[in-house]
Length: 196
Length: 95
Image (cartoon, rainbow over all chains, first blue to last red; front, side, top):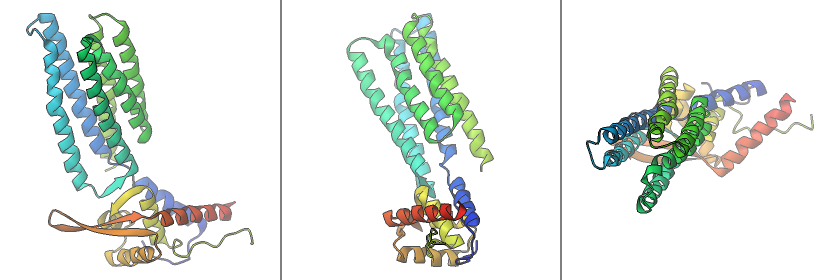
C-alpha cells in the first residue's frame, strides 16, 4: 500500500476503512475450539451419567461431572497459549473471554448452592439456562447466527429439563449441547478455515 | 464549499488511514499483523506509524514474546476522536 498523501477520493477512503475493518475480525478458530471441546466433553459426561443411572453401576453417577474440573484447566491453558500467539487483540476477543469466565464463576456458585439445598436433580436445567445466556450473547458479539440459534435451542432444552420428569430431563443436556455447542462449533470452525 | 470540512491531513493518506482503521477495530495490534493486512513495506509502515504517534493518534509499546521483540500499536482517545471526525467529514463529501 502506497502513502499517497492527500490524493484519495472520499470513496477510496471509505473503501480502505471498510476493507481494514473487515479484515480485523476476532480469532474465530479459537472460539470454535472451546465450543467443540466443551460440546464433546459435556455430551460424553451427561450420557455417561444417564447410562450409569439406568444401569446403577455407581451409587452416585453425578461424580462423572468432576471431569469438568480438568476440562476447565484445559480450556484456560489453551486460551492462554493461543492468546500469547495472537497478533491482534479485538474487543470481541476480550468480551468473549469475559462472558465465559463469568459463566464459569456463576455456574460454580450455582452448583455449590444447589448441592447445599439438595436439589441436584435440577442442576442440569439451571446450568443450561446459564449456558444459553453465554452462547446467545457470544453469538451476538461475533455476529454469528448459528450460535445465536444455538443459544435459543439451549433455552428450549432448559425448559424441557425443568418441566419433564427424571426419565427425559437428563437427556436435555446432551441434546442442548449438540444443538447449542457442537453444531455451531463445527460451522464456526468451517467459517474460520474458509477465512484463513 | 463552505459546508465541507477540511480532511485531516494526518489521517488522509492511504496507509495511515488503513493503520487507524485496523486499530479502531482492535484493542492492540502487532506491527507484523498491520504489515500483513496493509501489504506495506516495513520501512514505509514504520514511517507512517511514527507520524501517527507524533500526532498523538496512537501509542507504540515494545515487549518481548519469547526471545523476539514485539511492537504493539494502540489507538489513543485523541486518535479515536480524529478518526470519527474524519469519517464525519467523508460523509459530508459524499452527501
